[in-house]
Length: 338
Image 1 (cartoon, rainbow, N blue to C red):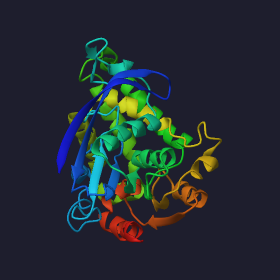
Image 2 (cartoon, rainbow, N blue to C red):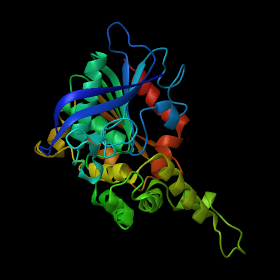
Image 3 (cartoon, helix red, strand yellow):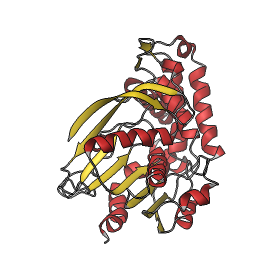
Image 4 (cartoon, helix red, strand yellow):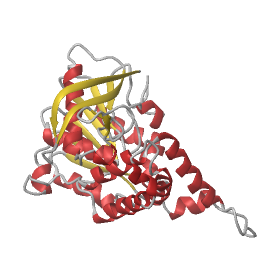
């Protein structure tokens, strides 16, 4: 495992037409790139994750695991706008010598993919055997497969969608409203918006899980009047995120999420999906409230070479992070099939 960073100088023109004077990208690699430079699994991470796949997706990367580092060269790049090494709101704007904060421009998944491409070319990768991502990792993976169809052999698309639905956008806006209600967010200081971020995380958790898993894991004594377990859990998760993330990146990445629509500028979603040449595994989580399974079925039905599989899980959207054994059983045949 290795963490690397590189600053790519020169203007980076965004889909909106705005320009970043330079971008820095951080990434992790696992395993060894072969002589043909094509034994690559590219992992796209979700909203608040980082490029260290072994940290946030334990049991998936390593010798003998799904992403077997004795066979594959595994790459994960931290997305633009994040706070784990790539250029984002807390980065210094070279034109002002001050952090961007709220002035950081809107980015789309097509911009994120172009950032990934900088890393791919730097590493000299010729072919990606499989690109895999869940949630907004799936948004990146599908865009990559459309933008560079000859590069990618297989697309594993987990608990994601071809376009962000109004339901998902509504959750994002609710989180942004929570951050905006924190007066410190408008001060443009490193820890600005922390209380709002804590509240935003609490909202997000309700979309990541569901009533079944909360009622199973957060049950209380029937005589209790205060200090309920569900309250402690929400508080704990909010505090945990504040310690490792910042409100400016979080706010920006929810706006990034909302931009996701593969059909934009391509004549609609169905035409866009026809551009994918990769074999596609579209995988849904039975209890996912944020990205219901009909969204993954839609992808499988509208690509040239797609299959749909479903994992039964109590964990809702977070099932793609939790159900490691079921994921491995489902994805391994897809990855290894000639």
